[in-house]
Length: 250
Image (cartoon, rainbow, N blue to C red):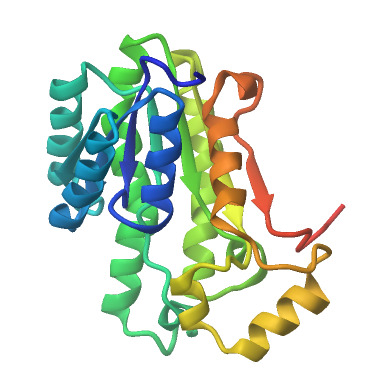
């Protein structure tokens, strides 16, 4: 098992990608801390994992709140002894954040950046000392293909995540902590499909991607497991596009 005796702290761990990451990491031997602003939903996911014989807890966590993050990380360390893997998955991503900066209310822009950008800072800083004390670790940030192709508030927030990935990879290198990111493309998840016009989805997959299908949850999970594992021990500061070949650039 690739993650035996490892502890993973997953933000936005209650549902969606966070829940999928938790299931996959548990199947590979990890213990997981599901950090989510919706603690009851996180507890439901943790209970399912425990009923399957895995080690999982849920903690309340607002990634935009430094004190909330510190308390959540402390609870995970108290339960499992430390943190080896951090997955910065929590984020705001509805279509409304793809409006121009001059249209989206300033309060919405601030809330978006507090979660998508400051949240990554809060969680990475909070987990650093435990990872360092355990001999190193891996941080995986969830960016987006929008960080390459749009100048909307959402796209800029995900461009910032790519920048933070490089910055933290540099800052934490001496602690033997690797920091990478994944930029998912158009995913065939229920939330994504409910939020986008069908004609946009069809045009994107058929005319803009090289692989003519929607991305799947497993595409992202597989890439996440790889980047968090020792198999990727020579990779840090990188953002891996998982987007069917869009956009390609030299």
